[in-house]
Image (cartoon, rainbow, N blue to C red; front, side):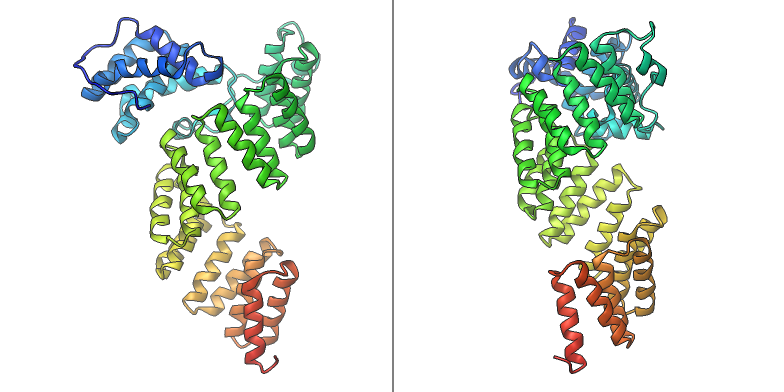
Length: 446
């Protein structure tokens, strides 16, 4: 947080450590609802920093002994404190006290009905590394009859129905989640969070315009609701209204400048718009806030590749893979960067790794075809392109690569047909136009 201007020798936690951790946990969970301001919170961290920096092991052990018997906000605050003060040390994540605090903090979030979409990157990584999945996140799921008939064991309050809605979201039961949030709104028409939940569910159901109405209502009721802004940005992105989405993400970050997830989404959007340098700035901020956000490292790699800085891109892909080693898209894009560097055998190995993870990934098959073209293994390249097109017959790059392979194998008319197919799908595809023109020139047909 940048509040640590002086160090003093300290070998024990303050006597009010539980109260400190509870305050910090509540602030980190929802700064807008906290009675503390950033300066207050900075003072808490400054008081703990000397002990944490001088003796990380002792600090972790003492913190675990203090907060674990209490649990709740104290243990969540402790998990955030560790990341605030010690996240730059890789050995911390292997420390037994860190692991037990993280386990307790995640269990606290689960029992509070916190959606997995609200987890920070390092929290997701810890949950998955511990054997959890997004499907098993919800600890107690209401039954369908509870959501529909609301028997006596489900309290008829907005908070209870909101919790039911969040549980349904976690299990992908969106129709039931929508009914639960509608019930919240019936009971409390000015309950802003219910409109956020409703909007999220509608967006997942691809009812994007209705979702926007819900998010707008949430923001009318609570103009400082950063989550409503962020979700509204997601929905606009789903509608391909990218410029509007970018504006809304910026609004969300003005409300909560500590949300790494929104910075990552902003970076992804900027990458899609071709603004790679600006995307890098957004991803750098996301990584500062959450050093375990694999998506931010991956996005940085994509931005650097878009700037043709392939060696740097590889370093970011490598970092992302240390966090999520079995991600097909990262392996696929690593292959593309290696091919652009002329490291074709390594590129081919990366393709094979991607396909081992997902044999039906048309992007990976197309990338493999591209690498094989570079290696002049045209028959194999043709087979890879055909496999990509069997999985997605409208993938333009595969049609273009198929044309190149066919041309080099001497099948000129078939190659011309492949380029024409690519152009029928994307009339503005420059590589396909260039390849078609060159083929016609070679054939003497100008």
